[in-house]
Image (cartoon, rainbow, N blue to C red; front, side, top):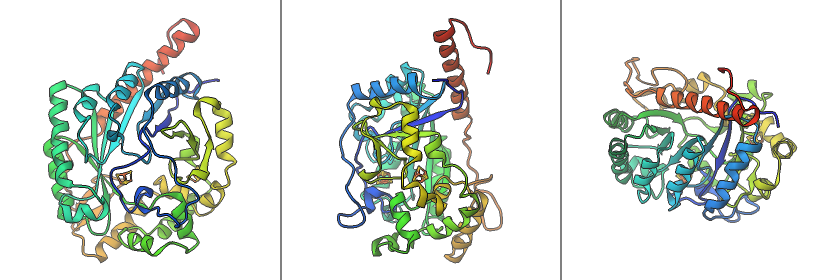
Length: 382
Ligand code: SF4
Ligand code: SF4
């Protein structure tokens, strides 16, 4: 197929399970007899299957510059062989991203040694009483120790991995906990991005849109600064936009099956039993014809979950933070991202340049390789 220089992303869930049970995530909020038809299978991806998926993405995917992230609804550090997965992507000159709750450190040293391009740490507090509410089963002291280990390993191996902390903003944690986590990240020279916590998966958002959420869901929703219904309302002006996660990305489960998108969880939303047996066009057609997209787009959930409404989300979230007495304002969509109520910024020292430069470099390498393979000559500059 004709390839484009535009990035196409593959979310390969190398672990179909998680060690935590966050209530805003289906790993924590899907209960038997709740709304689900069938739970997705759980397990670890076989390394040979992974290599075949990567080769198929390179050869038959739409992009000269595919990016591969080793997670979707799973915790990648649970996989004891994850360093091999990272090494393989590095050998293939493919961008490699990881996102972790960092409560596990077993393979961490070898993962950093292998040098993924991007490593995200997701958390929601600096102290256990705050963090434990929304990262259930997690231990923030263990996470902080592991963050220090990452810095030490980066120094030991001289790897250039770009590390970013995603601080999920709820009503109860935009306070001294965030200020302390920013200071901790500044010491470690990690970037930190505050992001409004959203309610997932799609299936639960559809219930909210119909006013059929469960009592347990209501309790979780009450912790959010931006109610899902408010987020849908604010995203309505953008509801006719195409959905970026079906247009520019494909998810591959640990067993090679392909779900509709990164926002769906139930097994009924699998659109292909095997990524290896379906071509890109057929897969895209199956996604675009899936019945779940209609109600999702009618309620603007696809744009809300892709953060497409921009600064108006900040305004809505900050209005709620003021009501609950938060001393901070959050600006997910503009700098400075964290400010005191009088506008004084809380400085975040590390910037995002590392990631941007790595992406540019890999795009250049892949383009050269593609032209060399197909025309036996070098590409002109992009
Ligand atoms: S750590 Fe991530 S995948 Fe695991 S339960 Fe929490 S949000 Fe879900
Ligand atoms: S429109 Fe909704 S259900 Fe369909 S792919 Fe996008 S996020 Fe998923």
